Each structure stands twice: as C-alpha cells, then as structure tokens.
Image (cartoon, rainbow, N blue to C red):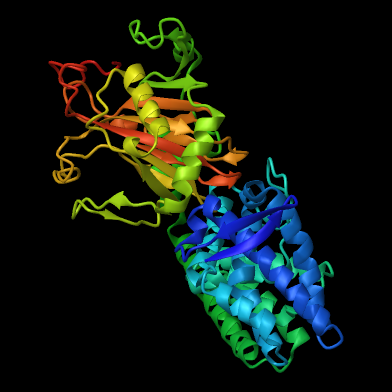
Length: 547
C-alpha cells in the first residue's frame, strides 16, 4: 500500500505491506508511525467538517497529533522505548477500532474510507499480545517493578512515556488470559495505585479489584484476596461475584486455621525428635554459579551480574593491530582486534564496518524482513519459535557489490572460505527482542540439521553489531559466564567447533532482551566444507581450540 506524505517539507512515498508479527521488528514498526500520522491528518480533515458534532473525536486527534509528530522525528528512538512500542500496538489494534465505531454512528465517507483501507495493514491481536508479553519479559529479566515501567523511568530513554490506568489494566488482562496470575497481580495493583492517586480513567476501581483479588487467590494468598474483596464490596455492596467470593474465602481461611492448629499439635508431639535431627544436619552450602539453572544464569548475565572473568584471566586478554599473517589487504592498514573472552576464545574487531555500509545493509534488508526462524531438531526444517523474537533477511553477494566486499572482508580476517558459508543474515529485534540460549552448530542428536546445505556443520560465527543499544541486548554465554555488549561498527568472532570437528558446548549463547533501543545485527555462519586446508583437523577432541 503506497501513500504520499510530507517530511521536512519534502514530498515522499511511504509503502506499507501486510506484514505479520510487527512486534518482532522495531525497524518495520517505524512504518506504523507514519501510518498513524496519516490517519491523524485524515481525522483532522473530518473534524473540520463535523466539529460541532464530534468534539470527543477532536480531543483524541489533538492528543495523537502531538504524539505522532514527536515520534516521526526519531521513529527508531521513539519505538526503542518498550512502553511506546506497546502503546502503539494497543492504539492501532484496539483504540482506533473503538473510534471507528463512534464515527460510524454519524458518518462521512472521507475519514472512514481512509481508516478502513489502512486498517487491513494494522497490527493484530497477536501483535498487541506479543508487545505486552515483551514488557512482562523485560520486567522479569531486568527486575523492574511495575511502577518503574509505568512511569517510563528506564535507563537511556530519549522519549519518556507514561502508562495510563487503561494501559496497566490491559497488560494485566493479557497476563490473566495467559493464566499468568503473578503478572496479573502486579499490573492490576499498578492500575489500582494510579486510580488511588487520582488519575482520571474510564475504568473504575471495582473492575480492577475484581481481577486483583482473584489473581491473588490463585497464587494461594487467601487472606490478601479477602482484604481486596472486602474493599471491593465497600465500593459495590451488591457485587454478586464478590459476595460469593467473600463467603468462600472466609470458609477456606477457617479451614486453613483448623488444619494449622492440628499440624501445630503434631509438631509439638514430635518436636524433640526433629530438634535432635536438625542438630545433626549440616547447613547446606550456597550453590555456585555452575549449579544455578541456565535460565537464571542467562537473566543474571543480561543484567551484568555473574560475569566470571577473574582479574588473573583478564590480565591475559589483549588488544592489538591485526593483519591475519600479513594479509595483503591489511599489511598497511591493520584492523583493531581485542580479546573479549578466553574460553571459548571470542575476539572483537573494532571499526570493522562503516556507517554507510550499515545503512545500505539496513536499506536492502528492511523490505525483506520476515519473522526469524530456528532449526527444528526433530525435522531439520526452519520454523518460528517464541524464544526468538526478531525478524531477519538474507542478503547475497551478487545482488550488491557492498555485500560481496563485506563477505571478502570476513574471509580475509578469519582466513576461512566464504563460498560454503551461509548468506549474510540481517536481524532486527522487536519489542523486548531476544534469542534465548542456543547453539549455532548442529549437535550429534541433530544429524539432519544442515543436511540440505551439503556444506557440513557451522564451524564458526561472525556477528556484526550495526547499532548501539541504550539498555539490554547483550550477547551472553551462560555456561561460562561471559557477556559481550553491542557496540555499533564492531564485530565478534568465535569458533563453534574444535579443530577436531567436535562441537564446543561452551559456545551456547543467547541474545538478551532489548530493554531500550533498537538492535540491528548481521551475522555470517561459516561451514566446514572448504576449510580443510585453512583450518586443518586436530588430533584430539579439543585440539586447536584457540585457532
């Protein structure tokens, strides 16, 4: 779909196709801001014709006029704030639909026809739910309380945005529909807090308290659930469900009290024996990092906690000017290389891709971005997964000379053959975009992982960082406690396989959720075939781990 717009006094064309999964790519979501801005313009034209009758619609338009004007000045920065991204999903999926119903009650063709045409390219319920789940994921990973997110006080934000009572309530409702009573409680409590502080809202406290008390009950806290139910009944004594719950909660509390008294008596009778046993029991030692579940290690590393680099090991990491054994391309102008980690050996190349190259790559990739996929170990085929929230596109060397030059640069610096490597994959992460812990190489229980390529296993990974990220978005290696932070214009490189061809399981890694900002990366997966003389096989399983 194509329409005309004016940006900075210049006429331009905007194109928007019917993409799926808007929430998985901030880059593609920027188009929605222009869509919304166009809708606001159309809406204001309609208001001028119906001003006396449609005062309510005019107030809505004035609010969005200001918002979209600010947003389109820096679309990626604006949508880098996850609350702005969530509210964009919510507005376009829910609130514009409500507005359409209002206008249809006293319609004129101009605005409605424009809105109806553009709505077919709007986000869906899946997008709104995906954006909401992303906020919940960020809340958990970075240990943020609901009030911090609601007030927009996130690190590195340029466009601060507040959540309304309705926003908090909507987030709680989505958690409720997912049977996630923990987050239901957090966001209904935040909605109630803002109502108690006097925020004006179309929602009433009774509705919020109804959800809140039930969510708390489902988590087993009957006494607290009873308190909120009593508060609800003070506001609405005739509330049928609350009256029923009141009696049920009181009955359950009495039942628990009697059970506790009986248990206390039993404890008293066997108390002496248990006291003696406790004296013999040795206190448990605190679990080390290696014993912490992977999910916890992943989240700790994303927050910058639990990094296991000792001062002694760090002293053995160096930076250098690198020409890869006097490669002709780099003898006179060696590149800057620094050690990021010792085992697995991870190096970073600085100033290795220019801003001009980055913009060209993004320009080529953006129209092709599709929901990122993963290899299904059962079928060996590509499929989407909830643990990978991003969109990707593949760029080949023959379609643009710049891509060919970048491929050659990787070959010159790694010494590895690129003819058997996969094409350059460009990825843009969405709201709270992430890729949970995974291996790049195929394991022994996945014999068909790359069978269709016919180029063997993924021997190494090259990863360009094409944007700075204000907060979050690190690449972490949970098994070894390593974290590598995005820095625009740099690239990191590591081997996935030992020289023997055996997989290096310490390279299991993840892309942390993007808290604030817009993360663009591109990567090259290099395969075994063609490397026989460039990286000869080792004699032992772990031979040549650092080459």
